[in-house]
Length: 142
Image (cartoon, rainbow, N blue to C red; front, side):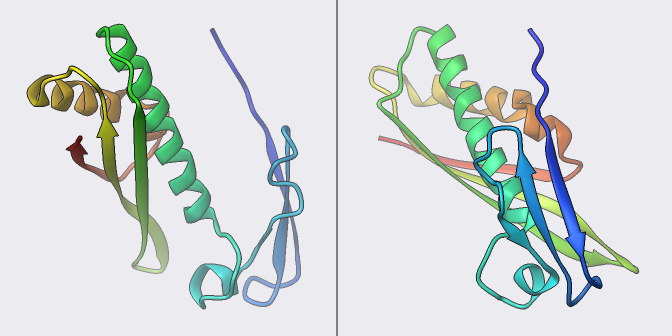
């Protein structure tokens, strides 16, 4: 199985005063605007790290649901928050970490088994594999 997705950004203007607009295959992000002001100065709107956080939380949740299903469980609810950190390093910036926080409701599973499955999903999630950053996972099981 293989899938390919695309996104395009058209940037106009300077680095600090300009802005970029997305176009995506699905159309979901079409017209979304990114800018230096949104990324670093608190202006309302999205930025690349927020989009990566959404991708990571979604990818991990999907990977975990699949791993649980393979182990014979079905989650009632998996709520994953991802906090992606961008830090200045030298003259540039680096995404240094993604901290995942999970609240899970999975009937019939023991804590130890759940922890093992969750860690495997964290490592196996394609977005986790893509990120060259520290990835942490904190979880609670209802």
